[in-house]
Image (cartoon, rainbow, N blue to C red):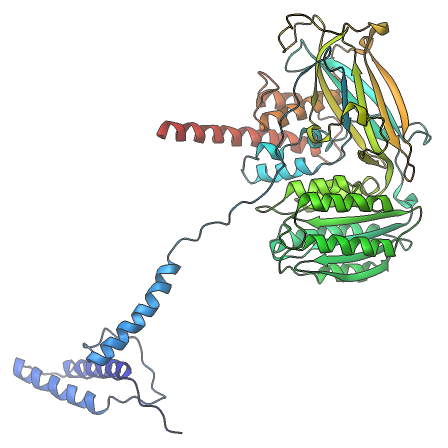
Length: 580
C-alpha cells in the first residue's frame, strides 16, 4: 500500500525546521561575512530545504520556534484545527463548581409552652434513635453549622446513657423513674426527667437471628464515607454472629439483587467476602430493594427469634418508588409479619435524613447514623442487643399535670412523636419500640404555680380548671406497651410528687440539661434564655463522671466547636448585612 502524501501543514512545518537548521549551520562558519554573503547562503539553505521537505515516516522532530508563514491552504487547515481545539481549551479553564448539597431534613417547630389548665395531658411515643446526634457531630467536625431541622433534641439526649435503674425482674420489661430539680437556665422553673430502662440480655443469650443486610450500592454510595465505611461497619458485626443465626445480603442500585442467600452466621469468611465484593454504580431503586429484602426475610423467618432488615443507605432514592409516604405505608404494612426494619445512614451532600428516620419508625426499628468506624462499633457491637432484639412494642407515655401545682410545662423535643390524647389507649395506634438494654430519656421544663417562672401571660378570666392538690402530686405518669407478638397493651402508672423536688440535680440530670441546652443553641437558642456556650461547657464538664467510651468528653469538645462555628456564622451574616 502506498503511503498517503504528507499534508501541506506538515510540509510547511518540516520546511521551516530544516531551513532553521541550515541557517544555524551557516552561522557557525568561521571567518568574516558580509551582508551579501549571508544573504546568498540563506538562499542556498532555503533551496536545499525545499528539495528535501518531504519527511520520512521514521523522522521525529523536536520542538522548534514558529516556522515561516505557511501557504494559504496550510494556513486555512491550521485555523480550522485551532477553532476546533479552542472551545475545549476554554471549557477546561472554567472552574468546576462543587456539587450542590441536597441533604433533606423534615421541617419542624419546637414544642410550645402549654398552660396546664388548658392542656393538662402530654402524650408522645418513645424514641430510641440517635442518628441526629452523630450526623450533626459529622458537620461540626467539618466546620459546618448544621441546619436547625437536622437537630432533634430527643436523639441528642438518647445518644448518652444516664444510669437509669434497671427492672428487678423481667415480669415488666423496663423500669420507669423520674427526677425533679431546678432548671439551670432559670431557677424559677424545674426540669422533670423521665427515665426508662429496659432489661438487658447477654449476647450469648440472644435468640436466633434472621438478618437481612439491605445495602445501597448505587452510584451515590461511591465516596469513602459511604460504601467503603458501610463495609467496615458490617464487618464489625459479622464476628458477633453465631451458627444458629442466618444472614442474607440484598443490594439495590437500578434494580435489586440477592448477593448472599441465607447463610449460617458462623461462616464469617463467606459473609465478609460477599461484603467485600460490593461496588457502587447506577441509580437508586430503594423500593425494589426493600421489597426483595422482605421477601428474603420471610423465606428465612425464625419463629420466636430476631427477624430484622438492616437498611444501609444515604436515603437518596431516585428511581422506582421514591415517594416517602408510599414507602412508609408499605413498610408499615409489613411490620405486622413480625419483621422489623432498622436504618443506618451514611454519607453527606445528598443524605436524606427524613427518609431514613421515617422508614425506621414505620418499620418498628431504630435509626442510627454511621460517621466513623467507632460509631459503627457502638451501634453494631456494643449495643447489638438493643439494636437487634425488641422487648416491648408501641411504648407510649402520657403525663397528666396537676393544674393546682403546675402552671405551665413544655416537652423538650419529641416533636415528630407527639400523639393525640385519645391515641394513648388505642392499641391500633403505632408507637416506638424499645430493645434489650435500651435507655429512653425525656425532659419537661415546668413552672410551678406562684413560682414566677411562668412565660405565658395570665388569662383575663382565669383558668376553667382549678385542679386538685391530690396529696402533693405534681403529675401522674402513665406508660403503655405491648409484649412482642401481643395485640393488647399493658399499663404502668406512677405519680410525680412535689416532695421529690431536689435542691440540686443529680449528675445525670446535670449532663442531660447540658445536652438539651447544646441542642437548643444549635437550633437558635430560643428556649434557654440567657444560657451561653460557656454555660453549656461548664455544666457538661462538671458532669462527665464515669465515661467508659469517652462520649461525654467528646461532647465537651463538640461544644467548643459549635461555639466557634456559630460565632463565625453570625459574624459572616452581620458582615453580609452591613455590605448590603
